[in-house]
Amino acid sequence: GDVLEYHFVGDIHSAVQGDFSSPCAQSSTGFDSGPVTSVGTPNVFQVTVKDTNPIWFFCATPTHCQGGMAGVVN
Image 1: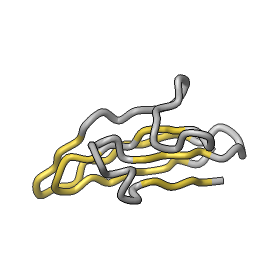
Image 2: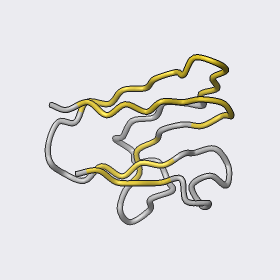
Image 3: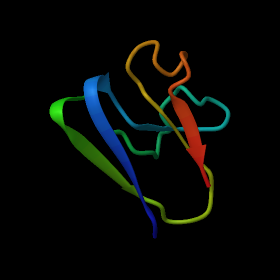
Image 4: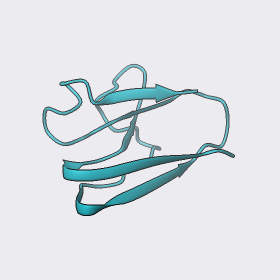
């Protein structure tokens, strides 16, 4: 399958899988990068896409998802 890459630079961020019904809450079966901080060289978190179902994701750092740091692929 395809591979999604999340490149983290600077402040604390994360890549967490959510659901359509609750896009800013972690899915019980989804991925979670945990909090990532990077200075200089970006840290990269990869997720393999296994099917064509939509994958909702967001940043779990407080106020980030509510501020718009969320998306969907597929």
